[in-house]
Structures are given as structure tokens and as C-alpha cells.
Image 1 (cartoon, one colour):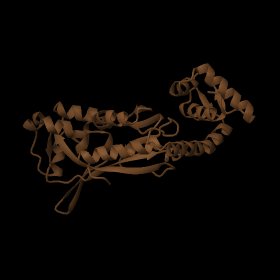
Image 2 (cartoon, rainbow, N blue to C red):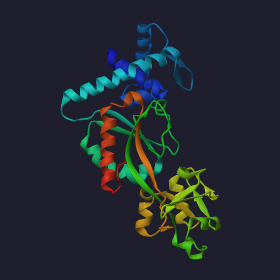
Image 3 (cartoon, rainbow, N blue to C red):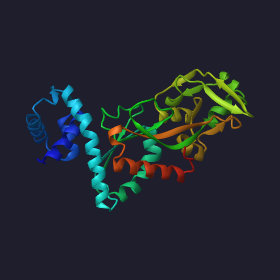
Length: 299
């Protein structure tokens, strides 16, 4: 791996991962070789591209400017290579940022079919229940719920997921009556990550109602919120997709069924430099199709 293009690709991965070792592992290059190639590149360019410490490496100001100018070129080259191959075959590494709940419930079950189509592609799932720094963590495509803040990222809406409230039969057996949103004041509520700090909003017969709930249990994990609800500790609100398994088995049952809680948008978000990356686009296309098969309307 000693040609200039390979060195530039290696530089990009080191900058994004903050580690010679991690970048080398992704590209199948030993750490000493990575260090040597980057040092050679710095000599050829005539400036230091990284600040090296015992814990990590970080791009210098010159390195950041070089990276910003370089990555659109690398993405365009990858797109060109993919186009001229004409086979639809994807190669290299695809790094997907996804919440643990969505990874467990949707992505992992669907992944064998996608992987079987693209045998030359390595797939890395970066699971986290907090939003990743796409650029800093080297994510090619992230799956995100809800409104997206303004940024330089490129987004594609994949689906609109109906939201509902649910509780376990065990909890409901001894709970107070629950016929309208105002009754939530007398109930134990579990607040998961998608509604933390927000009122629960409902619509019924054209009338909009918002209820500020005080969570007895608050968590930053949807999976934990659902598990706590199944254990009988209160009412949880999430997308129907996020509760599908528990609703199917009866571990949870819908409450306030006559009240519409609206939908939450699921989007694929690409850092600007990876918006044209064939593997990232192909994964978004595949997942949109899988969600459609599950009966979730596209946005």
C-alpha cells in the first residue's frame, strides 16, 4: 500500500478515527506501516498533518484543511470506480451509525440479505443511543429519528413511524382508569430517549392535546424503557416499530388507542463528503425497502 492514492485514503481514515491502529485495522495495514506512510506523505506535502500524542492522533490545522479538500475527491473517485465496474458490486468499508434499539430490531435482522448481495463489502455498525459526530467518528451513514438540526450533512427520509403509548397487562391490572391523556397524571410514566424533556402530544377528533409527563423512570435507551414497561413499572411511548415484538406477544398492549400520537421520522444522514458514496446510498435504499416491507410508510 505505497501508491499516492492509497496513502491519501489512509490519511483520511486516520484523521477520522484518530488512530493509526484503528485506521490500519480497517484497511488491513499494520500500524508501523501506517505510521511510515503518513510520515512519507507529510514529507512530500511539506507540512505536519497530525499532532501525535500517546493516546491519539489529531489533524493539525493544515491537516483539517487538507482533509476537507480531499474527501470530496475520494468520494468522487469511489463513485467513478463503482460506475465503470458496471456490476453493482460494492467494496471497501461501510460504517453505519445506529441506535442500539434500531440495530437490534431492524438492522441486524435485515443485514444478512444486504451482506449477501455485496460480498466484497465490510460493514461496521457503530451503535450508540446518543447522536454520533459523523465526521469525527468516520460514519458513512447514520440512522436518526426525529427532527434534524441544520448542518452540512445530507439527509434522506426513510420512513414515517407511527407513535403510540403502551403498558403491560400486569401494570394495567392495578392501575387507575386511563381514558384520556389527562389521566396520565395519575399514572407511572417511563420516559425514553425520544421524548425526554418533551410533552406527550395527542390528537382526537381534530383536537390537539399536550400533556407534560413526569417520568418515574427516565432512561437514554429505548430498549431499557421498553424492558421496564414490560416489567410492569409504567407506560412507555415509542414508535410502533420499536414496540412491535412486545405488542405481537402481548407483553405490552396499546393504551389511549383512540388518541393519535403522530409519527416520528426516520432518516438516513450522510456527512457531506460521503453523500455520493455508493455503499452508503445502497444501504439507505435497502433499508427503505425493508421498512416498506414492514408496513412503515415512507416520508
